[in-house]
Amino acid sequence: AVWHAPGSRPEVGDFAEQTSEEAFAPGQGVPGRVWAFRRPSWISDLSRDTRTTRSTNAMRAGLMTAIAFPLAIGDDCDGVIEFLTTGVNEPNGEISAMFATVGAQLAQYLGRRRAEQAESRRLHAQLDRTRGFLDAAGALIVVLDHDGRVLLANARACAVAGLDEAELIGRDWFSLAVPKAGRPAARAAYDQVLAGDADGFSQRLPSAEGQRRAILWHGTVLDDDGGVLMLGHAEVVARRAAIAAAG
Image 1 (cartoon, rainbow, N blue to C red):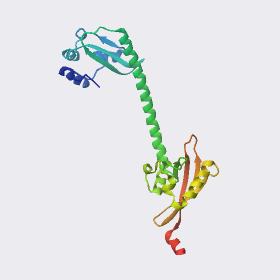
Image 2: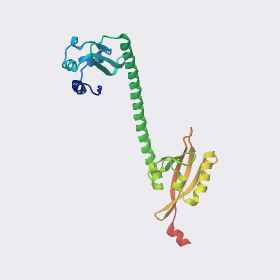
Image 3: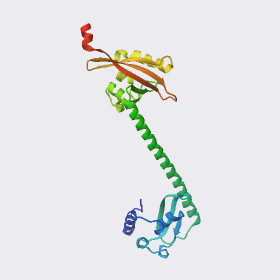
Image 4: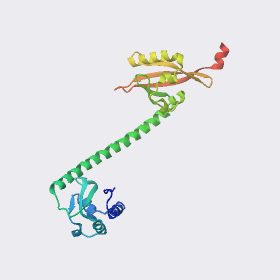
């Protein structure tokens, strides 16, 4: 990545564009030397340094001083930051020390970011595997918070509710998946599970395709306010035609 002040001479913009397209071997040019030796470099007058096409282009743009420092901790180097400026500027020990400190701090930050990203990828992969296991399960699996709102639902639970998981998350399970007449009893039974007075309950599902269905739930209260893990098995209670004939 490159940057130069807006309104700079056209030659500066040309030099920045050339730099963004250039690759440096270890030891090549100021950035390559800093990369190779893991040490800051201060070239006060590029005309006195080893002449390269790049240094010549920099001088044509009026850039005479080059300062670069590594983003490194020990032998581990993540990159190089280079500044070029007009005029001949002699080395300054305090500024050089500041650049060395900043380079080490940035290297530490980048190292933490890499570790966090690696851990995030690992957790996402683990979550994807877990999600596959949940969706392949024969049981309905939902996790509800203490108010009965959905925190997680596997594919089978989504199917019986007739909604995608994204549509279920954060919404009240009992309002979505329990017929209105049965909601008070289902909520009361859920409260008993929360209180530890019961380990399960049954609820009716909205009728579908001429069938009346019910679910028998087993509930486990999760630690650290993780909600309640509900494992359910659905069954057809009766068909409407059979109910009508019996009436």
